Image (cartoon, rainbow, N blue to C red; front, top):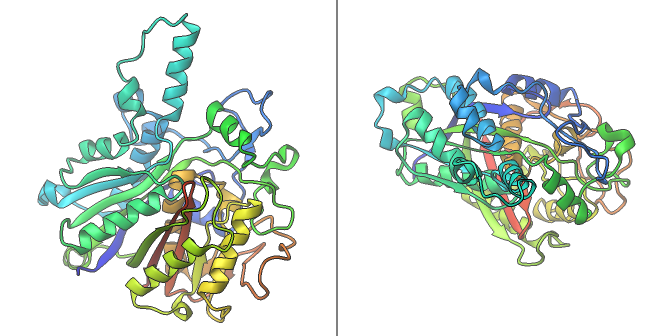
Length: 413
């Protein structure tokens, strides 16, 4: 099996439109939640979300790319542009068939779908749809347009596993390189879910927080007063590369990916298994593949979305997986700052996990003041402020509707 390393990173998040800004604001405990500006929320139970700030697609996209793509694709192209620049990869001296793209998204072109259907209804059902309606809508269009922009002719598809989508994409990209079917993979995920239908739909499920009077404090994972997640938007991109190829060209290597696994709870359409059985197995399988024991893991970026059921099932799974031995482990839930980016969550959280390795610093879980009494004693959750901590191995968990569980593991190199 080939070794796989990360040589480029790109981030577009509610707390930063670049990797450096994202990391700085994360370790400083900044919340990205505020009043929704994208549409009139007067009839909605939830009136806030973690929107992007000062997003300007023209930094990396031309006029036609903006016109012909949904926001989730624009977010993807934006983050990938930063990651490609960061990697210093010269694609002109490589075979285009040696570089592939596997992207992740949960909802795809939701805003495009809403806009076109509204226009149809408001136009007295006159079927004057945009010729770009279907291409903008399709979930695979981000991976396709990334390939077109950079001339990448290798493996190309989109992974869809709800909120685990970008972690699924990272795992698949990792495996293709390990199996010597690619030299480089562009991977990650993007989501643009702050729309009327998406907010309304999650409200109907009672999944979103409705703490409209204190939006910045609404995402409070593990806290006894948590009441639902905060919607977020954005993208994260990673350049995965075969180790010898990266070393030969003198690339900066951020970390090595050493293990990844997926399972399913087979339990409920939206709720996690109450004892976290699928999550336990995903973590165990990822560590087995990485050839490490639980005591080797120094940092865990949890899925923890600030929902009453999900947070507890995850900490139960963590307690079981780590046998209640937390001497080397620190845990945080960074959705407390970014909100929940659905299919893009795994990508931006993988970036934070990698940055903890680079800087030996653990970002905090903000807004968590009183831990839920159901949380096992001694659970090493970092709250309030970032802390220094030696990190050689970092783990990231993401879970999705449908019971999907994904775990990825990164190592200092």
